[in-house]
Image (cartoon, rainbow, N blue to C red):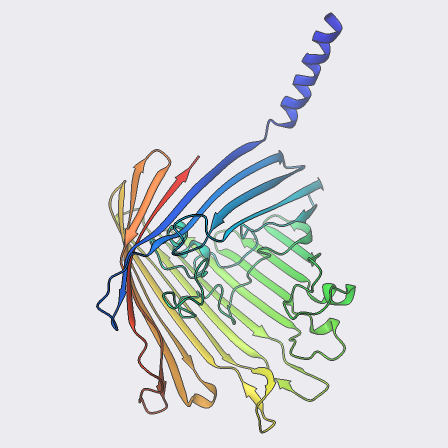
Length: 422
């Protein structure tokens, strides 16, 4: 019996030490559309349940090693009212840091830990987009349906030509990190994929294509100034003999200013490297520029601004006359003022506009939205969002201002969503 007691004590000490740094948590999100309508009809409809998601997260480890596992179930069936097209996914990673200078990580880290868009990215509207209070610039659900915008609300983070290094996202990878000096790190990301090269060009996952999709990211946190971020993201072209419709990759550079009390700003640049196929289809390269600004001095009023533009480049295809087709010029801008009425009630007015100028500027597509919404702390761990969304998605105009296509309808929605954290 004494041996058994001694064994149990030792076992408890070992497992206690192993799980001393463990943490568990989760969240439940429910999003609905209470009412919806448009300028072409007098009918007002119930939107139904738009989105629900339950997420569990477990993390374990310390500075020497550990990992994280996230399991998510949900659905994005707008009118089903039940489970509809249910989905589930899990992702996770493990890491090992044998010295202060080196860390190795393998798996998927989908929380955007490496992304460079501190203001312009996911956090611009944050959880409001997942709970449908704010229009989702990630198009998490409903993309392609007649009641949901097809393109205009994609943010500077997701739109092609985004000026900030996007990080690894859902990319399964091996991440080797070096820490040569205080505040400085270098990350080499090698995709390990799921059978296709991760540039999304449909190529087989040969070792050449996988290496050609690598990321190289250098960060320097400059004391009393901000964060400098430089990255290269391969797009598969170097791993394919013909490079048909592939780009070689993108160069990113950005700076996040955080040294001024009550104010943050960021500037991002991306250059899509030029290339030529064996069939002499050329891409001269394109330039993307992004800016973000946030003012929050701790008072009741704060606001954010983000804008992104892409210029130049070719599509990698030719028209019927054999000419290389140019990429359209894209410009997007969003503003998000917020007034904290009290600690439990915040009011937002999210607005934005997007312009796509067609090849040779023969016309344009213009969209806009106005989205006031409120955030309410209902109880411990429980929040809800509601508001009004009014938008027109991409009305086309000819070169001299005449309407090129039939008018796009003005659509309105009344969303309502809950978040519960535990």
